[in-house]
Image (tube, rainbow, N blue to C red; front, top):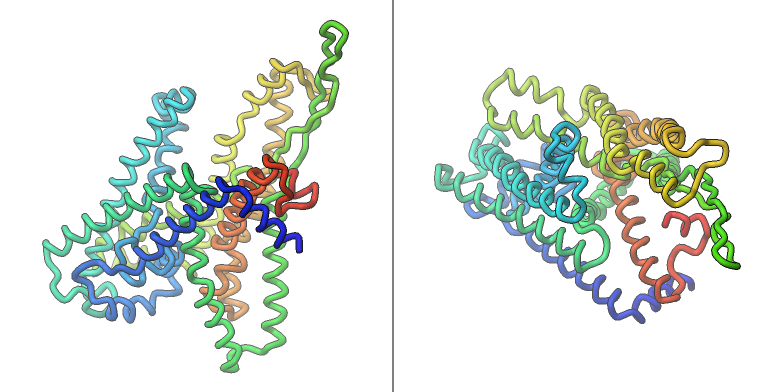
Length: 441
């Protein structure tokens, strides 16, 4: 009943209704483009050839683009080149004074950084399009002839189409963020993941129906996966509140301040970005090695980065921990928080303002980030263990204990929070009824 009432409230706000419909329309355009095959590619042949790669890194990449890679569509690269370019810019911001200066210039600096990110997206998309077109044209890559007439013309055409399509997808994400609801880039990734859910669920049910697994074992697995989903939601919304006391000020006959507020520090401040960053970095070696499909040494190196290998899980987990701390340092600056508190006359009880406050906040941030980062890494590599030891189909395991689940939960909660904000501003009841859920704002 409450859900129905909340949906009715959304329909009562024209601006919110238009934003949601606009977002759905652009996401529909993206999904339509993922079914358009690159000119010169045999669609039936590429579908049969890529079916054997469903459990490796190729299949994981294909999961993020909603099956576009398996169909060799014009949106095969999806939004991942943009994510890779964003990572490069973020890393440059940590070591390059010029980028650091831009980050401190406010809106103008942000616009310049966004422009550099767009240029970087074109460069990364060009490189990935080149590698993908070479793989398509080489019969040894998939064991079949996918491109009936390979040659220079096909390579140039495929590179141009894939690069231009990536720029178009990037534009879709930015326009959704500006005129729609939610973060456009994240929603594009989420919709690509959810597009594979019905197919993966059917495959899991069929494996039980055919006698590959026992129904009782399957129920235990489902209960375990439900617990993982609950853990992901808890990790996403969990916060550590730091009390801040404001000094009383007497202006005339009125007294201002004196109340207690809280700084909400999330256990997972970085959100889903460490997963996306680490995943994009893990795609780079595979992209580079795709240029050498007939080299045995390169293929042995590529086996280290196979999605179901232990080395991949270890490297992936360590990178997630690193990027969690890295992105947390970017997203939350203890020095700025301490300076803002001092200017506003606030202080943490028992802690001196200034440097001591900064160190106090930094120590708490470091301590709460460590368990969050480790939990994030364990959840991200969990599908590898589920596939090996629980006999769960790889596609289904991705949705209940891996990168896919983390992205879907984080993006879903953030989008729901924006809808909630629109409803609350107009004095309507939203979806989040409890105080804990509303406290995320």
